[in-house]
Image (tube, rainbow, N blue to C red; front, side):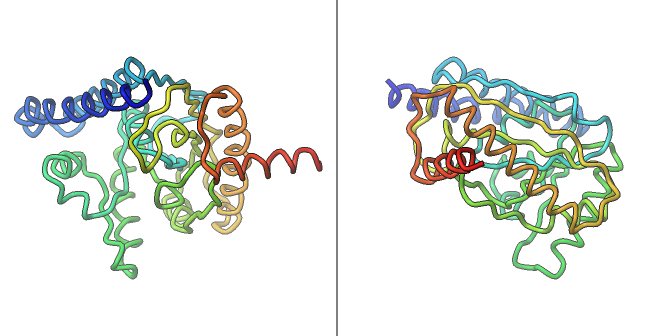
Length: 264
């Protein structure tokens, strides 16, 4: 049944994407930017509903009240495309930092450009961060929520952390709160592979880190707090979904967590 449900979901996912792109594109590109965001938000909600109905994969959000009003940075764990879908309708006016090449994808790239997403050219390291900060400052001035994945790419649940210092640079230069966000969507919707596992995902939004810390102290604090909460939520999620098939990486991390608890 998992194979069948995964196939049905994939079919529904791509059909809804194509149909909505075709139907709504003429409307989308003539609407004001923020008004037009209703269309991708509704697409995201539809796919969350499809996951709930077909797989079934449900979710809940803890700590939504920790997202401040106005401009802020949301530093999120990134394990799956599900993370992206879930955040879009969750916050008022999200703006993503993404690889410049994604803007070249037909329709998707045009939609992203319409929403003034922040593209970066990773090969141009000397100018990538200054350009990113300048654009981020412009978007935060509009009271948008900047979404950043501090590890830079999708990671398997329980994988060794690999935080990039760019998040500290953004924190120091932009002087807005940073809100850590944890979820282990990769247990159900892996970064690679076809299968979608049924179950229940928790998104945990942590208390914001207010501006004013030295950048190095902030960076260490962010990594320590996010990884500690990630470990707690990983154990909770696996215990609440005992049917999950876990990767070797996840099993190894769970063992290390439990060994540390037993030793402490």
